[in-house]
Length: 340
Length: 273
Image (cartoon, rainbow over all chains, first blue to last red; front, side, top):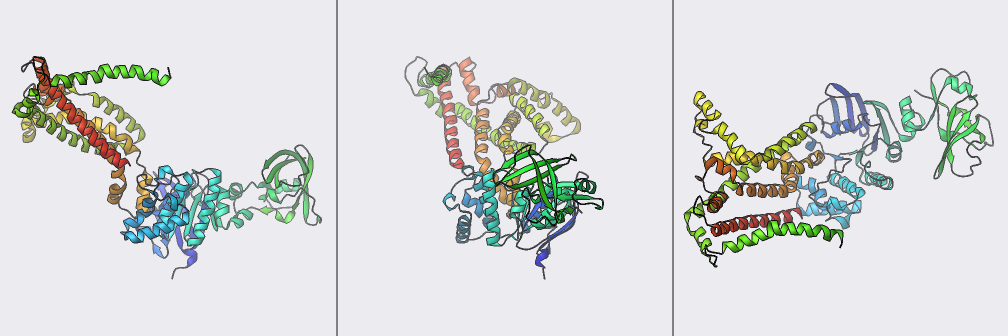
């Protein structure tokens, strides 16, 4: 019986191009019915892994099990996996209806079945009125919704989304990202979402898998990864953390006698308003040298007497300081985390 | 006077002098006898005498064959080029641009040097006992088709290369992930997208072959008759000089081309819709 925790199981995946190993002994499991993000910078190998799972890159070593079946040697059209491309890859000569119906026609479904399935899917993506439009007459967001519908209508076991929001404007990205999450929850499809945008990954995912240079850095829930990064790469990539050594911590008067290593302090944990009870808190004093108002949030940096730059952020209300002011910020000492 | 009118006026003047007036004169002259009076005899001559009917048939036949062969090779060639490295593609396109212009007398003589009676291919065929090559005559219909293919293929590749380059690899990958195999993808996506370009290219290749004069003349003289060869003979007097008859033949030539272009455009517009 298939364990739903190992719905997709990739073991010891190695991929090389022209003698260069781009994926190094990668192993991970994905739970059924979840949305997992592959997060990492450009060139980290996210898309390469996705293409291997889809069967579009078949020169690899390792095992890929989907729903208990070894799919490593199956052709892409035998895997029952859907894939969404960054460039939408809609067929320009087919209408919205025909694009969505494409896979059903391959399966030789009856006309009535196709009509019903596509009409239902058009309603899900909210494009019923655009069924006879050609892709060229749709906006970027609409095109990507059609591409998603084209895959979802086949009820794939797994849906792979390769940076599906990258070509869209900021507002549409947020809208479509929420829609993708809604489709995933409503239809219960297992999805893998590739992105290099940590905010996007955090917002949408049940699980995040962080990759760097072809290797898995960390896998876990968005909250867990953000709060407890295991490597400096993860800490640096997913948040704007303050990274300090044991010596730095001592100089700042935060804690003494720490073991060697690197520590992080999340900027939003530094409070500019003095807590009512200072028990367990430490204070950092410095001059505000940077201040950026980002709508509802404010990011600022303090330069301490020891020359350290400490990043902090708070909500954009009751701000009682401005640039060049000398202020104190407070931090629960227990929130200082050692990395690794 | 608006800038559009300023541009339109000289352009119209050039069109009038260079194209419209000559066509009007040609059509009118086709209905005149040698004495200048109105007559339909030029057309009755063309459609009743075997010599002229043969010229029309030959022109249509050789253009059709050369057009189809050129088109098939061009489709394969253009597709093959899109698979090469970008730099190689650019070099090949420059070469094909040059090759597309290599027609007429220079091409005919190049082919005579290779395939003529005293040519390299004949010598090799005799030395190596290659029968089919030894029997091949560049001065025959097959020879003419070979010559036409030489300048039709580069032209066809140039016309088909750009639309084929627009075919995205992701379309194939998307189709495969949706369960399609290669032939289903070609039938449902590639052919419908490329068909208008293929039809357009065929019309151009056919028209190009129909209008070819120098290559055929250099290879066969007046031994092989076609519409351009007969028009040339009627004008330069190597047959019996008869300009009105030449004009009638040229009018038929223009009508065939106009019908082909109109039918082609109709099909293309329907496909593009």
